[in-house]
Length: 147
Image (cartoon, rainbow, N blue to C red):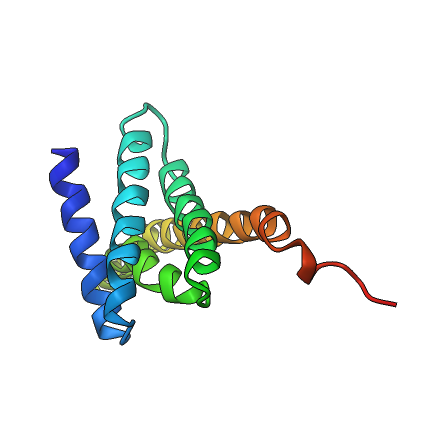
């Protein structure tokens, strides 16, 4: 089950990479990043009370692996981050929020809207934390001030 989902995560990452015109030689790396992040997210999501922790962990893995891949291939980090993170975007929850508001179910719409905002915040925090922790370690010469 998890392996099948990881394959589909890799394929969707590759598909979004094609959509964003990522070079073909880099697509397999982006796909591997998407698959590994999905496996981590899937594993954490099975824990009781995981909630948004799985989104955070998946985004952190994407950010961390993208930093390594960008350094390895001498490419911008966004080439690997954008296709891999798209699968995590809470689009369906936003859709549910909009439908609830249109049906005048304001409490339910607000619930789904807040849920989507927290999911997006968990994704942003995971990516930002991975970048903030790893970039200074991997590229220390970029952070040395020159007199």
